[in-house]
Image (cartoon, rainbow, N blue to C red; front, side):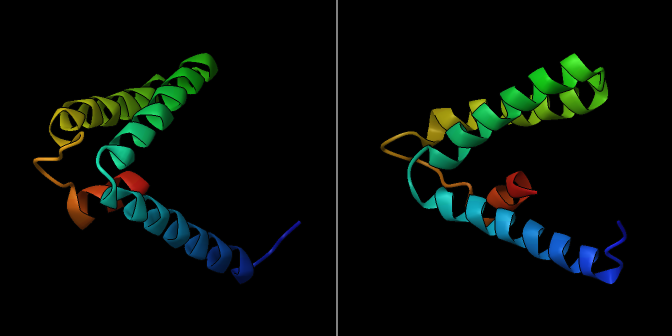
Length: 91
């Protein structure tokens, strides 16, 4: 089944939707980094089961960064990730 140019439009809008959804969670102390940590852990597990170790390593590095950031972002938050960090995690 070939969707043609429609596929690229829908995928582009879907990526924008997910990036903004993660960006919205950055306003609450620790929510963005804790949810992303769970996603990264699941991604590492799935990648290791499928045999894609390199992608699992990237997800593990992102999860480790979120874990280190959560120390400073839990209530009461001393730092905030901002748009750059949350949009990177959304992609």
